[in-house]
Length: 174
Image 1: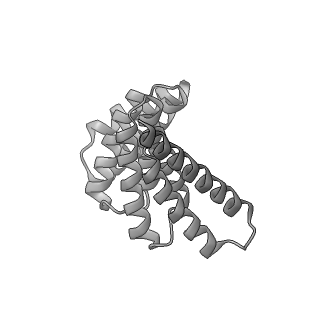
Image 2: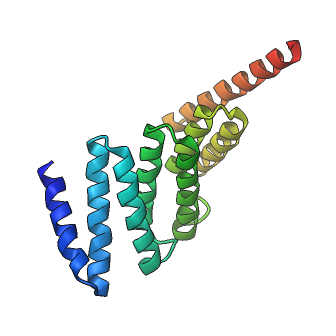
């Protein structure tokens, strides 16, 4: 809590300045305040701070800058914690665009896993399955055969396929 107060006081001082360096520092302070508010489970306030920080970062550094990844991840997490799953998914999708722009097509496995989880929570098993299959393809291109992560992903895929098949069976009976 003391750290949060210190960040908020520093933000007040930075807002009085209007140079380029102060603007970047303001974004950093807003990020730190947003991260602290997540730890305090103040998700709505966190989203406000982090969105403002992201807006500044995008204006100063560009939309596809590596620094936006942590901010987008935190925004997505905060949205998911308050049940705003569609907004969470939108943030993860923006994260994937940054991953691809910065690291190339074969990146973002952890973000894809989070997206799949959100799709499952939205009860969109087909979309979750498509994303998990992409995760598996990325894992198989990077990890050794038999790696525990590959096995875990294959189990998720089987579960999703079974859920989809079961739901189709139920639909046929109705």
